Image 1 (tube, rainbow, N blue to C red):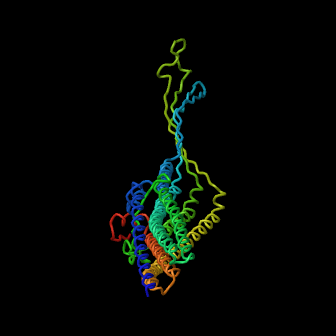
Image 2 (cartoon, rainbow, N blue to C red):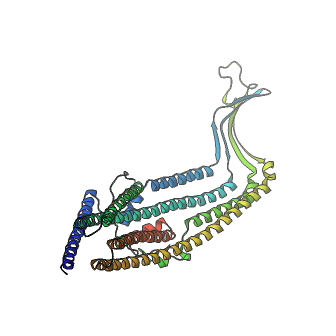
Image 3 (tube, rainbow, N blue to C red):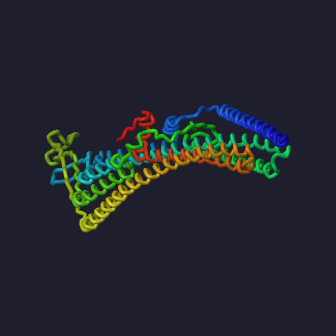
Length: 468
């Protein structure tokens, strides 16, 4: 009886020490994390701040904006050149003398102007350029939208890495405290050498997990720094307390309100192809007739040698010379026979191109519908999975409480208690991973609502969803 009482007191003493070491480990972990946060010299940034930083600093967004401006400027220059006729202006002096009996004529062509303007083709070309400008704008929006999607994904990936690393720090401290307790128990003969080795292995595994989570943290931080255009090793923190509750009204994302930029771009490509077909049918036959015109302003003098006074220093009086001006205007028509013969083939080619673009449009619409169904199904699945994982964590914690009580009553071995603790730790990791997956799927759904405009408008307006 006395032996049992002594064992009870010893176990009670060891349990108190274990609790003491556990508390010290948790406190030490908290102090360590506060130290790391203080050294970071950065306050955690919100998702809104991350998107604002990306819009201002991201190099890919700046490149997309520059490409858009360059393309629009190029189209504007071509449009201006298109509507200015091809003009040749010559200001010179060409003199010619012609004898007509006793008279000599002097002719000068100081001014010559020719011009050529293809009116029919220019009308269609202007319409096509307007559609191309729309495509350029939409392509830039699509690029920015994809980059913002990367911002959101990288933001939550870093939040996940921070959360896992914090948990790893805690587990290392707890494992170290448990090893101290098991070491003392082993010295007193309460636990076996296998139990002691298991505690030591648990600490090694916790440290290995800590190293892996630390590397994942650095990697995700580098990715976000690249997006922000910052040096790779800049310390940046994000808000890691993430809820699975949707940021905006997720139920408002319906088939009718989805804005698929790829489909909108393809619709404009179909319109361009239709314009080119009309141009080929109507404008090209007329363009085979090249119309040009020119006019020349001529002036000259006619001198009468026969009736001029002889022997005078001025051989010609004012009455002996006649001044004349003339304006010549000409229009020429050039017929392109080869172009007219190839006209049916050109029309067929334009019609085939239009059909090709229509097929692509149909495919893009079906793909957009499939994307909505896939992403909606994935989101619902992940929400359900998160709920189950969270419930599993609660059950694992309850199981651990029971296991501790059974171990105290010598109903289970220490190894079984350690297994219950590992299951709780793994369940905590699973919950963190599940939250990240839910947020990623959530923003992929938001991405279908128009990309950049949707993100920017709703991030700045809070929880109210604005649909285009």
